[in-house]
Image 1 (tube, one colour):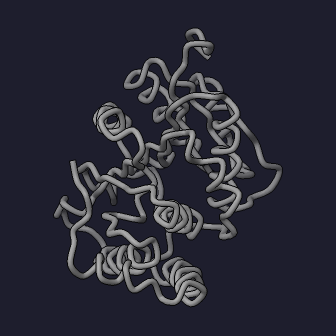
Image 2 (cartoon, one colour):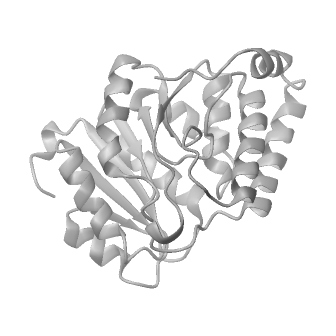
Length: 253
């Protein structure tokens, strides 16, 4: 890894599965965009050369022997990043749907709101895209916001900046796997009084991506919904969260 790791203040966690076509480019662009960061790629049991391409580009790699899902990859990556004792932990996907060049803006916002989770939001980008995925994301936004107690914009975006000190107690309470992991993390954060702030990023899809998304709108939103309804049931359906969802707007920067 280039540079002096002892002065790194940011760890960028990139979960990756079968991403040999894109992960090297993403890692190099992260290095160029956030020069003082350590980059940790979590290879989720890929059968291709994902790990080798990530290492060649300058990332540290944590490898799973078999595919465990995005939730397990993020859990392992976030735990490893917390152990590095840095103030900020960034996540983004390896398939090219997030531009590393947008990270400095999110990090600047995080520095202005040091106790909040910063989310790169695609909601304001009206570029054409699969309608079913947009609809699924809006449903997920509504139920996750309700359960968290606070309105959140683009709960399904994997491009985030976390204040590292808040993560360890949250990670111990997350039980979901797959794509529901990120949603439950936001719900638990909201329950602990940790708010979110969103920053506009572009929506990238179609030919610009190196592969079709692993996100399955119906199945994955179903899993997110089941997890969310379970949490709502256990907490008396969070009337404060419902009121805030209906009458307040997500915080934006």
